[in-house]
Image: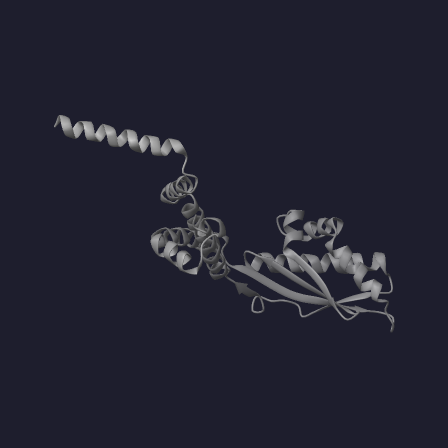
Length: 226
């Protein structure tokens, strides 16, 4: 029995399978890539506004203070306060999904806002700033929040993710198509027939010989009659 049946495809056999089903690989990969491009176009361009706040106050500031402020900004309670300052009352979930917060050292909190338009990201950033300036003293009265790097229309950056979706979809489609080709090759009917034939030749059951003899006798009788 052929060892390839149990050990899988070697390099030459794999190359042969790819060449044999190259049209399927190309069409499947192309289909997934087009889907990825369409998804990227559907999502559209994303805009980002960046800014931050300086925490003024005592000469020495505990690092836990800035960490506590980060958690406050991430909270649902703060998002609700931000929503009250936004135009048209942006939902809490949208605000939390748009907002990313971090810090530099123990004095500066960084804010990144992402969204579908410059107006949206600036609206959210302005609302976050108003909510934070008003809320900060209720937690630490000695802290004075000062906005820095305030974003403007000119500073808002844009990102189009279509090419990232296209590359990701192409790689995913290629991997999936190769896996599909290998699976189809495994299920190929010719491979199954060859396997059965080899098994029968290895085992050689007695009824095979009997059938062959019977078939020969029937064929001989037909030749005589003709």
